[in-house]
Amino acid sequence: MKDTDLEFVEEVEDQAEMLERFIEIVEDQKADILLGYNTDEFDFDILRDKADETGVTLALGRNGERMKFNRRGRFKGARIKGRMHLDLYPFVTHVLAPGIDSETLDLDSVAQEMLGKEKDDLSWSEMKQIWREKGDIEKFAEYALKDSELTPDILTLSTSPSCSISG
Image (tube, rainbow, N blue to C red):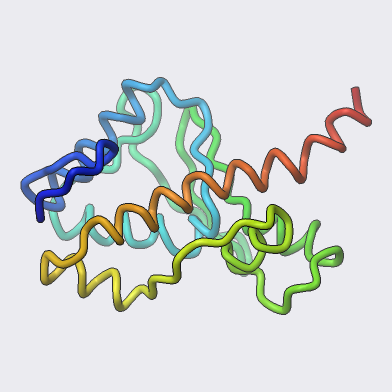
């Protein structure tokens, strides 16, 4: 990967090492919850494909348990034994959507409306191009960081009133 001065970016040799480092971070942090936005329909599919390509086992569960993928009807989801996986997108779609003016419920649109914050747009094809060509890794990293900041902010804003009502 291209060198960067961003403190939150770690340099790894290849995709296999990146997946292994991600698993290590989840384990080291003793994460109880893995939170994401549309992770069941996008991110975890990519992780699974890359794990298959590289031969890395997605051992994200407690005690090295492998992440499993379920499909129930038209819904699919990741199961991580010993950890909760919370994909915020279905919650936004089924619970918050009636109160949201935006016609699209992508993370950027929801964050703009609910938080007054927006992120730089980076398409999936642009991400793949940056990765392949070892391009503007800082743009890629900033994009990913912003996703990781907006998602918990939306969760906090959308659940804190109901938590205080329920005691």
